[in-house]
Amino acid sequence: MSLLTDLPAWKALWDHFDEAKDVHMRDLFATDPGRAERYSLEVDGLFLDYSKNRLGDETLTRLMALAREVGLPAKIKAMFKGEKLNTTENRAALHIALRNRTNAPIRVDGVDVMPQVNSVLERMTRFAHAVRSGEWLGYTNQPITDIVSIGIGGSDLGPLMVCSALKPYGHPRLNMHFVSNVDGAQLKETLKRVHSETTLFVVESKTFTTQETLTNAITAREWFLARSLDEKAVAKHFVAVSTNKRAVADFGIDPANMFEFWDWVGGRYSLWSAIGLPIMLYLGEENFTELLNGAHSMDQHFRNAPLEANMPVLLAMIGVWYINFYGGGSHVIAPYDQYLHRLPAFIQQLDMESNGKQVMLDGNPVDFETAPIIWGETGINGQHAFFQLLHQGTHISPIDLIASLENRSSLPGHHEILLANVFAQAEAFMRGKTADEVRAELAEQGLSGDALETLVPHKVFGGNRPTNTLLMSRLDPRNLGSLIALYEHKIFVQGVIWHINSFDQWGVELGKQLAKTIHAELTGKLKDAQHDSSTARLIQLYRQANGRG
Ligand code: F6P
Image (cartoon, rainbow, N blue to C red; front, side):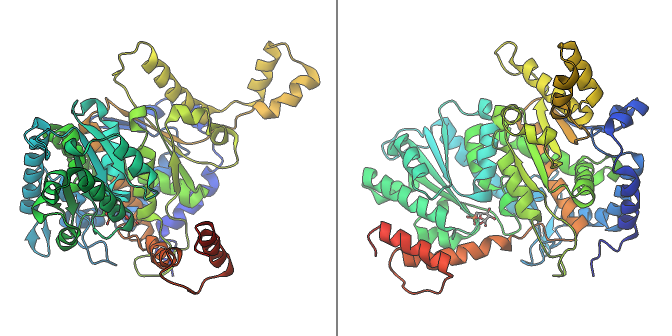
């Protein structure tokens, strides 16, 4: 029996939904001039306008009642205390410790983790300083110019997204490259652009068993040895980030060149740990610290603010309103900033790998929707591609429009056009355009009669499509830290509401397992494994195409 759907607050929300579902936001704005002010919130450099959502005071009251009924305040405390919320792996989820700038003790199994966190941070800082200053030299005594981060999923997307987002803060001598795909193309193209004497490879893997990462790392090392012709030179050009010292040593990287993190850091929550080494190398210690400071500040807000004025809680509960009541199964992330172009992919992993679950903590199946499908693209490009569906399609997909207020572009005119589009889209999604408005417009253009009426239905916008507008004072390390932490906590809150484990990811295992067997078949090491006829035929096709009959 579901814990959630039996709760009085859940039932009260359904009762309310019946009367609230058809209310149009246009009317909510018309009858409440204070709506924008009441339904907005500022935390440090982040401003959230959530007024363009299909809800009112009663909705929010009932959503917060649900949050209380599921015990959200106690769960927030439990996370900050280091309780083992990841029950299937018996692990804490303590990314907040990695940016615990107060240094107050946080214990796992009775041991304060802060000294380890600080000691790795210090090592990272020393190493980053050496590389950035040019003290760290390659095997021909030249400073490093290129950093190739090899990782995948949480060991790639965080550093990649942050380094892209904060490019203007990057070290002018350092070029960053990220290799995650095992297709060979990504690594090959990267290696074409770098020189062995001046390249540092950072191999990033929590487990250090991930096939894609290890394959890329082995190929990179072979490439390097073919040029340096010196095993000893590897130590100057390869470092590892992992929780698995033994596997790093087995791979051939000196554990002295390994930066450690711990099993209580989830892969997709790990950019704050040593997995953030490429970030620190590129941006420097101060900017990395600012990133941590921004996240810490959001942590403090999340921990202390009342639920009704708590940014992650508000975003989460508004999400629950759509996902579970309206049945909106997707959510769009639309950053209006080219530097944030990897943010949708980052949040996609964060949300879908965390909350894409079908059973509750007790193992019973859920009887409600969980994580939405997260997708997106830079907003401006999206407008000219898929926004048509968002405006007039049959799906209702809430959208987060993300932009920064400060005009950092030195190119005149661009930022105003950009921001005009953000605000216009939010307005259009909310208001829409009625048939009468369309008629008036068409009449003004000189149309009448059948010619006019035929066009009307095509030009009507229903509106009432929800958006959150998230404005950063500017895109800087601190605000980016806060923004990422905001989404981490939003996702945590939704996991609590749904009573699921947001910190495991068993759903990625089956494909990995099957790929091992199939790989052995493709390479001719194994014959006659049992498959369905489709899979067997695909394997056969590959073998024929590659002369393996
Ligand atoms: O396959 C999914 C996954 O396990 C993610 O959860 C993780 O972020 C990624 O692979 C990489 O794992 P690792 O850091 O252990 O190489």
